[in-house]
Length: 426
Image (tube, rainbow, N blue to C red; front, side, top):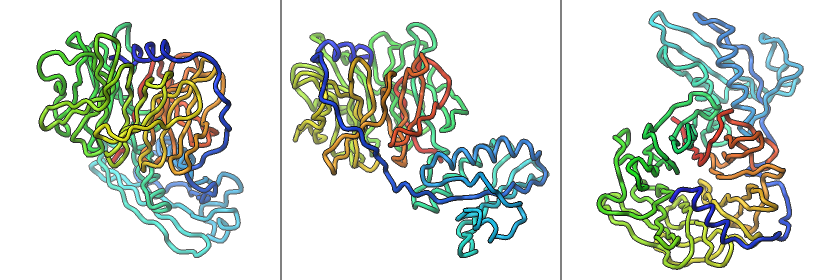
C-alpha cells in the first residue's frame, strides 16, 4: 500500500480536535560542552591552494561544526606559524595541522595531526591515501569522522549517506542517494513507476516497494552489490504491500500487507525461506514498522484504539503495548540506533512536528515547531541528528536537525522528496 494511501486512510479514521499541549523542552544526546578546535591552513604540494580551500578546508569546517561535539575556533586566530601557547590563549583546545601532496601518478596523500594545546602533545595522527578520482571533500569527511571518533569513541557521520524517494513526474517516483553534505546525488532505481519506501540493511543492501509490474511488490538485493530482484511475493498475489524495513541482522524484512477491506497488518518475511508471518491480526490499520537495534521488538503505527498511535510489540507479535500517550494523531515511529529513543510525528492544528520519546524516562520531547509540516524522521547513525522532510520552503525537501531543534539545516534544494533513510558511510 503506498504511503500516501495509508496516510489518507489514517486521516479518515483519526479523531478530530486538539490534543493536550505537550511541554516543550530541549533534548540533547550529549553534554552541551564542545571541544574547541583550531585549524591552520593546509600545507599544499602539487595541488591548487584555492581548490583545497573550497573543496577541503571549507567542507571540513562545516562537517566539524555540525558534529555537535566540536566547535571551530574562528576569531582571534594566530598566525599559522605561531607557537602552541598562542593558540591556547586564543581559546583552542586542539590544534589541527594538515598537509596535502600529489604524487606523479596523480594519487593524493593527506597527513593530519592534532595537538592538545594544554599538554602540548599529539592526540591524533592519521594518513589518508587516495587515487586521483576521490574528491577532496571525501577526504574532509573521512578526517572529520575520525576526529569525532578520537574525541567520543564513536566515528562521526560526515561520510554517511541518505537514501530517499523523489518524484520525477506524475506517477513516477525513484530512489536516490545523496551524501551527508547534500552533494554526490545518485539515482539508485530506474523503474519508471512508483518506487517507494526505501530501506537499507546494515551491509548496504537496498529494499523497497515498486509498482513496476502493476501491483505493489517488494524488490531488493539478496546479497551486497547484488542485482535488484523481487523479494515478495514470489508467486501469486501478495495484496497491497508497503513500507518494508530490514531487521538489524539483515535476515528479515518487516512490512505491511493490506486487504480489500482497507485493513492492514505487520508481517515479517524470512529472506532465507521466503515465508511471511503475520504479527498483528485485527480490524483497522497497522503500518510503518520500525525495528529496535537488537531485532527483538517492533514499533509501528496503529489505529486500533481510535486515532493513529505508536505501539510496541515483540518480534513475534506478543507483548503489544501503546507507546504514545498524548495527542490524537501520532505516527511514523523510528527507533534510535542504540534503542533508547523513538522518534515520531504528532499532528496539531493540521500540521506535523517531530517528537522524540525517551524510553528510559517515559517522556516525549518536541523537536520542531512552526507553521510548516515536518514528517518522516530517520536517525543519523550516531544518534545526534534526525533527517526529515518539510514543506517550510514550499515543496517537500530534505532537512536535518539536532535533537534540540535549534540547528535545522536544509540538505538539498531538491523538491518532491519523501521517506529519507540515513545510512553509515565507509
